[in-house]
Amino acid sequence: MAGQSIALRHPAFPSRSRPCPKPCGACYKRPGFARSPQSARSAPFLTHRPVPPLLLLQPPAGGRISGGYLYNARMAEHGLWQLRDVAAEELNTLHTQLPPEQPLLLDSIWLTEAHAPAFDRLSAGGRRVGVMLHSLPSLIAAAESGQAAPSGPSNYERERLERLGLVLVPGRHYAELLGACRAQIVIAEPGIDDGWRAAPRHRQGPCRLVSVGAATPRKGFLDVAQVLQELGPGDYEWRVLGSLDVDREYAQELARRTACLPGVQLLGQQPPAEVQRLVRSSDVLVMPSYDENQPLVLVEAMAASVPSVAYAAGAARHMLAHGREGFITEIGDRAALALALGRLLEDEGLRLGMAAACWKRQQSIPSWPEAVARARAALGS
Image (cartoon, rainbow, N blue to C red; front, side):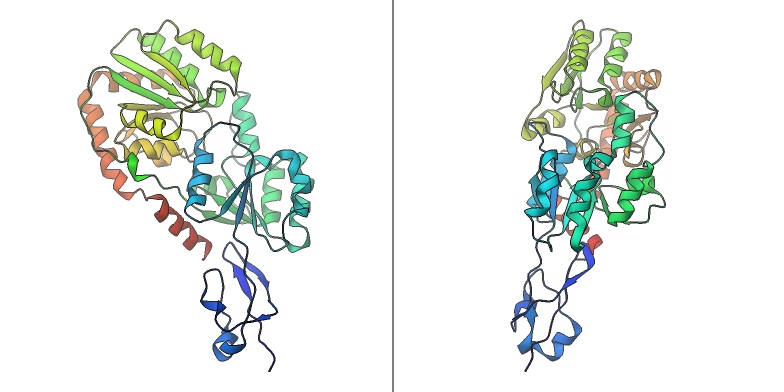
């Protein structure tokens, strides 16, 4: 009797199917296998082919720890995908190293015309390729050059996303930014490590301000330095946690501008456990970014009952309730940034009330295992 064929579909790419010639009577019970309608009538003669797990390719971090890299790593740890660092020059030959049925996600940093041949080679022969969208190259370029952020993807970025057909985004901000892009857009929001969760507490001593991120123009730390200079000496401390090597000229200018301000510490890149400790022990998170996607540190600070003052970059406006869990100001509006910081420095009752609102909100923030389960459901697995 001839064996039947089961069409196995990877949840991220449900249109992809491939029969397997090996007869087997029980493999449909294993994770990663889909049972066809025919299999119910012919269980002893089932055939199978294991579907490779989803593989996310990202550029090497180079010692830098960002929210995007942490997101990718946490999702991998809890089984949403496998993770592989790939240098840009490796992309052109990677298609020869992977099985043709291997489903891929590529980091959106490679959504440029220079990498178009690599995308074409990887998706040739029916291989399914999608994009993990943490930011768009056009948005990054605008932020780093001081230009206004574009209202959506460039023509090339949109065309490439539509050709690939699948885009994963860590929040609804980019889903809205992509607008009428003709691709499947899957929102996979981040979780947090439960060690971030901490109840509100009264301020002890100086108001501890903290900022997290590499010292680059995109992060806007010079705006905070200018605001603190204008506010003058006060009862506060400001710690900056992030690499000082990505843009050394900017980092040196930040050091020069803050040298005369007591209580300012540029601590450089810190391991995640130390970032967690320092943010949890802070009183206010300051995030004056000119470009963001779904900033993980806003979620983590909220779980730690730390109110935030942030520019309205990326999803910040959606993630933070202005006037309740912190303050949102327009990008580059240093006067509004100074006003918001001044209010929290001077009014501990206001700050504590916002901390209580953060603590209430954190109850709806999932853990990483919960976030992965939600992402799997969104992908149809």
